[in-house]
Length: 417
Figure 1: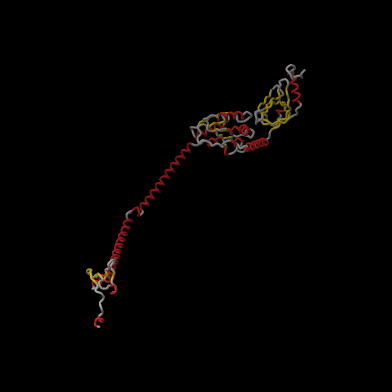
Figure 2: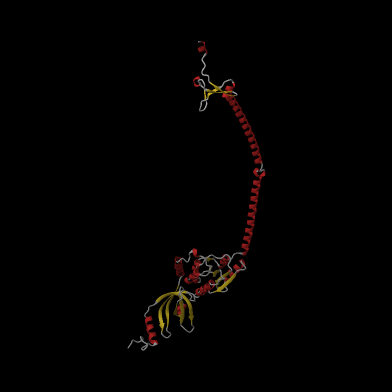
């Protein structure tokens, strides 16, 4: 035989299961829980108030039951969206099979605690790099369509559309109206953000609200919303309009605007200002071009006024005169040199003529050579070289005479003896 509830043959009845679960939960002690009220149902004929406590950072909630007097005497006025800390004991109602916390004490979450929580989230996201300036997407100069997430018929919507249209009349808007405070604000804003991000016509998304208290701006410091903004492929502009305490989404967004009006001014160029800028740039460029032309014209005038360009042949003419003078000087020097050399050659020629053998022969001298039987003639230098019968060759000034030696002659002294 199996234990009750352990087999289909021996099941437990519903009452047994519900009773055992209620007894097990009843053994749990009281617990302090922090969250945001999303529902508050007060029935006139009931002394019990039913509420729902939501976790702002996750899609989870708990049902609460609370005495009406405890709600009436709460330290803050309870409404949907109020952040509270409650002390409750877990209860399981066997009749409906539902779980809830029976509230015994309610405390308000102070501003300091809210700011501390926001600061913890800010440090966490900063450590993950969601605030890195290098991740910021550039805002297009002239967006065709602006995605706008804001409250319905709000002043923020009016400011953005009016200012943007006044600056650039052709701009278009894709508006998504959501609630911008309270427990349901984050899911609606995230849904609108995803819809605009997937729209290819939207070039930039503006998240706008006209400021408010720290409690009112809690949705814009929600971790889910901040991560959704960081995941967007379209540039996001945060225009919450709350200067003293910036919500965390200001740091995650690609551009933070001080107010919705400032957001419109920063994402849409002013047509009049751009036209004035274009006119000014055209005037400046024309003025710069004229000045450049004037400078170049003045430079050309200076170049043309220089002697080398005004009289380009003057230098050549001056050089021509120099060349003529140099040629005349060169010719004169060459002529003088030739005359001097000619005179020198004449003197040398006269001396050579005077000292040469032809002149000597002309004065009556002769050159006597012996003519051997073989070999070349040789000059007769001694009488011993011309014995009797020696063939002689006598050269005089006007020719050559052949002779035969008769031998040496005896001197006059020897003949007288």
